[in-house]
Image: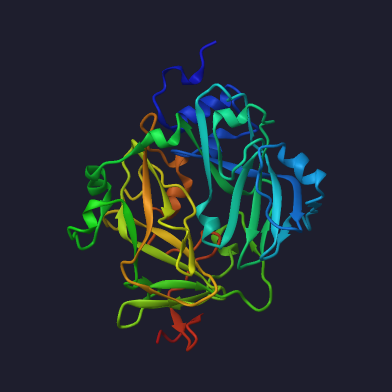
Amino acid sequence: MRLPWSDWIPGVLSRRQVIELCQQGYLTQTQPKQSVDHSSIDLHLEEQAWVLPRGSIKPSGRSYLHFVEQHELATKLAPVDGAYVLEPRKTYLFRIRERLGPLRDSGIYGEATAKSSVGRLDVLARLVVDGTSRYEGFSPDELAQSSGDMFIEITPMTFHVRVKVGTSLSQLRLFYGDPIACEIHSRELWNTVLYHPDCDGRARVDDTLSVDLDSSIIATLQVAALEASPPKAATAIDLWKKPPNERPQPWPFWKFKNADKYQRLQLNQKSFYILRSRERLRLPLGVAAYCRAIDETIGEMRIHYAGFVHPFFGFKRADGKPGTPLIFEVRGHDLDVSLIHRERLARLTFYRMSEDAIQSDEAAPQQNEYNEQELKLSGYFGEWPEKLTITEDCSVVPSEAGNK
């Protein structure tokens, strides 16, 4: 029998290639037409769930679930009214619906990350593949003793959230060949796909991203950053898509922040922020990317980026702007931090596609949602109203009379 990868070249697998793997049983329990986009596949929660009272459990190369249960590290979690309520600062474990098939000799590697909408809610979601000794990925050799089962560890940090069976919090990107061998290192590529507002010589020679503390506009108000501000009464945010009029209103959960006259922004300890990159990205059909912090702990803040960057991201904006900024999710540690405009926070890794992506709306639901973004919240929130007022403590409230 002809193997699907017999004539593939190394690179990120396209939607067509992932669907072919699904159809031939190398990835099972999937709904490929609904779950696969240009360069990754959504993973969905199954009904088996546990709370981990002693905290996160790093995979160790053994049968993951057997190890967790043998050492009495997990307690069964039951749904309430069809959903699971997850509390901040607690870690939970869910079985993933999708399963990996016989990929040991395939040359297929996997890398995972939390979806963008999840990271913007300060929720940590890490994939565990049975038989591996690391989070967020696998090599074909690691699957030799694997059952093919996958799990996800979920830790909300700021908000109470709810999930249910079928919820998708994580994406899996598949590669033919070692991901490192699929990387593209080219100054010419950086200059092509990264747009720098001031086009200065320094900015156009590397693959780093810096923070933009110039103000964006939300409901006619100037905003450089969004700071999470959980309501005193615990209100759980549902992590599944609802009609816009059923999503929670954003203003009880967020504050507007701006830089001072020196272009500095104070990040308060233990607070969570959404910021945007100064550089704007436009990916062509043969390139995918991943954004990671230059150092995940820079000084006294933690930076994480949720979501892969897919082919066609940043193209065909309705407003005609050249490219789209990426979003930084930043959390203060134990001290306040003074962040300055244009400080470098992240680095892009570019990968070639195994074959060019084909542009279609059904292949890119997440891309369509964030392709026009500037400083944008998670899609689990409703839209900002047309008029807002900023209070003295930087909270925002709807305004009928206008804005301050």
